[in-house]
Length: 351
Image (cartoon, rainbow, N blue to C red; front, side):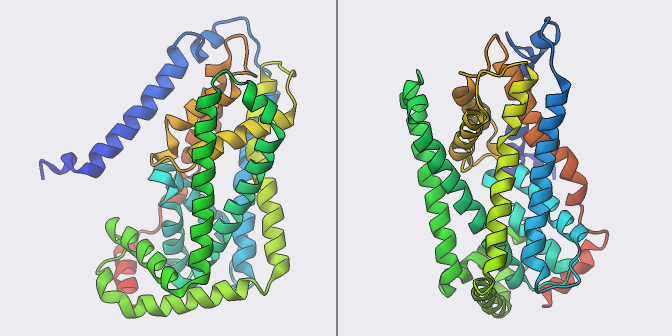
């Protein structure tokens, strides 16, 4: 008992929390940090900060809308407020787990235990949504890179920038390819469901995974059937692609609004959107919750040209509070599943 806090997961969590606190303190108290900005004569235009917050909230709202259109066709009783709960559950667990791996398993659990959807169906719909997300992100990133070659080549840290972008592209293409393989291969799909089941087992939500092979095979059939059915709904997929594109634009505009809040207008929205796409590209696969450290590093690397007169660190901290720490604070209450979790665990075990 006395050594429970020495378990690897507790040590890892402590290190991540320490890293986040250290980063916040650095960007706040170091030279040209937010503390210096607060005590300087620089005026922040709060209207633009509110626009940044609104843009992030719009991103989160569209997340719920996309989940809603993926589920509503087959589950008429699925309400939009249910979709908000599923979306916020995913956003919270994605934010606090390495490489966002905890979001979808917890969404599947919520949809199954509280909304009575089959695990195979829920996994399929969320994987198809994730595929749309990855494809749109990759396409936006390709357009951003091609359109900004002169800007990239002119960066004084060109070697470092190219390395980050290459890592991001390889990671995104690999993940997109794996999702497509899982979607069309029953054997790989089975491994996917087993992977999610083992994650749920590790966090004490599902027990005796190895004894549930028969049930997992049943869910696999549901998963594969649901995958095939979704391609018979082109309007749904087109809507999902359009909404996901708008979702990314909402998120990518956050740095632009912060940029304008300092009174700057020497760069176009497209330049700021492209830079945010680069940051997402290089930090998305970092195996640390919220890509802490890597996200801030990417921001300073790609936005250093735009935020002048000692505002870069302040901008990075404001950006991080809006799109990460603020998201955790807002979605945290939705991470609470049920008072009767123990009884529901037993019910899931018997299915």
